[in-house]
Length: 68
Image (cartoon, rainbow, N blue to C red):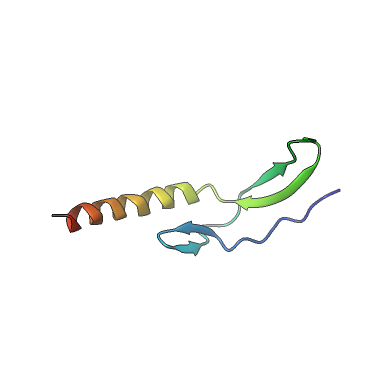
């Protein structure tokens, strides 16, 4: 049985849900009891980790400056 790809609000980056770029892949969630049973399919974006790391670096720098 083919499952539809689930719409997602985006990735939680820098305090909000954002769609960083177009979906370029998918994450398939398999049942641990039966790996042939796909329980969900999510769209993924390869640019999301880079955007999350960039936001974390900005936050880290600002938190260091705030503690001075």
